[in-house]
Image (cartoon, rainbow, N blue to C red; front, side, top):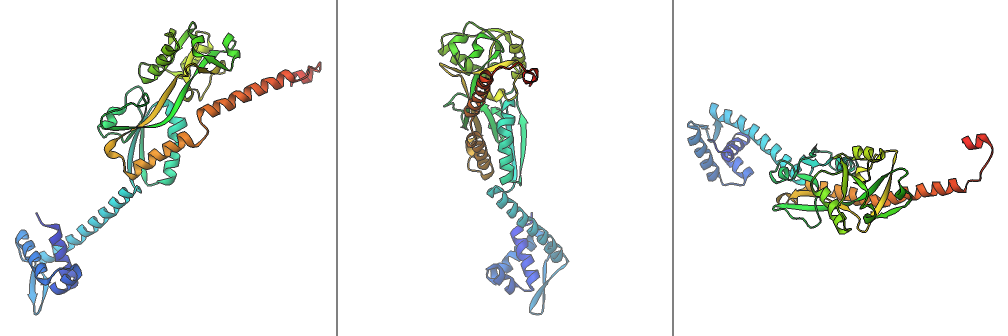
Length: 332
């Protein structure tokens, strides 16, 4: 195989017109340049330079290899530029895995922020429900996965970066006796028929752990592994449910949502990345965008409080509105 460095020396000799000029350009001694060309001739199995007076000129083989050396030099320069861009986080590719309810409130705004800052990075996103995405991260098939895991969880070779806590809310049918309350103790739901909203896994574990701390195990009347369907079952009067706030971005019109405490069930949402990948500019920038999205705007708790405050303010205004016999006023 031809030595690429020796090809570059040959090209310097041909383009500069002499061994001495090439040595000056490369920072070598003339003797070292002559030795490199001689070694390349042995590799090529033919003469590459011939003497002409006090100078040298390339043979046909020398001209051929000089042309290829020029192309190789361009490719090496392009590779160095591409590598520099990659190391600086200006180009590259990231693969993300996420679960469905994290898509709209977390992944979408974080990716918009990331793309604004790093337009040259290609992002491959894929929803993994109901599969566990951690094996993809461990195998290097994904750079980052959004997962639910208990706080302080550890996985060999992976770093779990906590992004936010997503609290569960009680979802009740309109007209339910508990629906008049702004907040409920979890134990007050113990005797209710439940609409299960979670498949077995860390999300369901968070609910069951909270119920156990409150002294009961939920009695499921019907089970759904889809939050929208679970809301439909609740609206139909089949039971009450606990659904995380990120799963309540679209609410059924015939249900009410209330805070729960004593304790408040919470699912902890993390970004999982390989320990060995930390420090890569593009991945670190994506983690930054996810953190900023999770914490930079008003959290789920604040948005829920604002919504509840607005609802109760409207109710108070309606109750305080003076009665009237004007049909038009009643219609309005």
